[in-house]
Length: 219
Image (tube, rainbow, N blue to C red; front, side, top):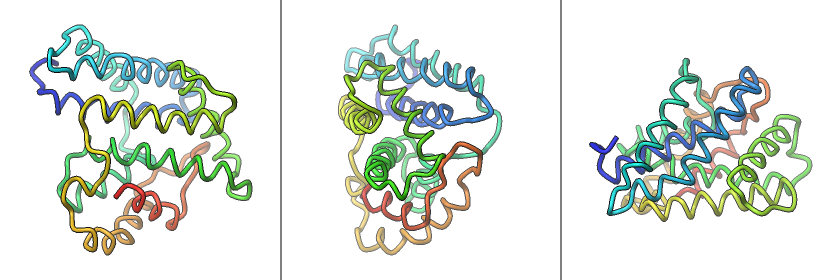
């Protein structure tokens, strides 16, 4: 693990975090999957900043390795959820590092979910289950929350804080991508991502318009 440079380790950590968020929603792995997701999320938030520090904490880096092994023990199929589908499509379109794009898309996706919480007509059973799942993750890392909606809002801030601590970009614009080129590509990227998103019970499936909004927010 210490053969990775700090940026590679940061990208790996955010990729693992996105996988853990997806695993939490996996209806076919309830119980086992939930526990695995909670463990990985706790490890990432606790140890990734130290692992990516100038000093390069070897104990913390070993903890990230354990998180990688835990996630790897579950992942056995190429099915993707919202964050990975979007980051894969954006990375391919603009030749950007997958881990860095994950770090940008994840809080943008969560922030969209916060907005959805405020619109009752958008909340079907899969969205409610998703909110409850992410709220559980927020509580697992010790965030002081009042209810599930507050938990998601604070989780957005926690992911952004983690991203800043490990030195990853906050937006697609930081890659010096031309804004007009990005905006023009958004509809095609959204369509590809929508096709790639795994359709599984318990996972919300965003509309094309919702995906475009997440992509817009990420810029």
